[in-house]
Length: 445
Ligand code: 2IT
Image (cartoon, rainbow, N blue to C red):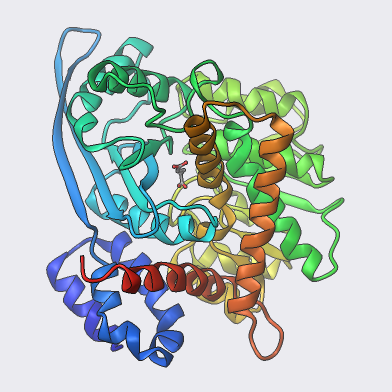
């Protein structure tokens, strides 16, 4: 494999799709060695076939706002790869959404889903619609208009969407309601549904819980106890919330959260009702964290800054791609950070990742760390298919086991000669090998 050739041809075909090219490059660099050890991969042109999505739907989403004005957004669904199971992946509503970001997310999802041990292919969808400041009625009309286009292309055994940034329980309710009305079936073509209509216990918490189970495995492998460790979290949405809950439960001390307006540092620790308050902040629809400092005067708000400037033991980016850059990485390392785990998808820039690995920091990539979210979606699909509901304990223990298993796969494929675990390499190789072998088995399709 000639990585440079593949990348330059991709760049020529898809100019300007920087996130997508970044995600592809990371995987290619990681797998180059094993790829070249297996001539059958080259023979079957696995890389050339794997880097392009199976298909992409792009559609117009016209809707009417509360003032009676017509608004137009763009909707997408990128069905990336269904080699090991039905297309599966979230829907993102955020002003930054474009083809590049959804292709990167769909590409990552393919490997992440392979790591979960469950039979799910990779997909991602979304819209450049920003829920910020929108009323519930507007959100409902937008979701309905979005689904009016998408419903024909999804189904319980073809493509199962879920939430992502900007798509939570409320949006999934509206999207699923419209899907069901149009498709006239009730098989659960969506995960993250409400508990009353086929949702799974622990799905809301799953991404954050899974991430902390994974972080705990990383630390345990180095005989480090998470108890008493200080933790910087970015973001204040569903993922940050679940991560904070489990971090506190395991004995860690969460000292930051952040929003687009800046970050909060709370030396007393963010626990108990303060974590509930995160949800309140999120539900206000304003997308700001500053009010936290008014409510809890011992904490401090840093306008326009990122939490990575604080001295902490563990850093958990939980917001959005490329939210932690090389400068941030240098700050964290100079403050003796022990572990950095991406909970957001591709939370760190390529330069930041390289720097952490060069400095032998315990660093783990999003596709391993945050896989508990989609894994629990897979468990929701199983429950829907069986028409039953598992208890919270049942789901949680399966989730925990899956995260331990993913960690094991990373060690197996990422352990270097000096004993350092390169989790980026480990996760990429483990995910790739599974998908590649299945592609070969299924022929040229
Ligand atoms: O990035 C992700 O893994 C998700 N947004 C969850 C996807 C899912 O299908 O649960």
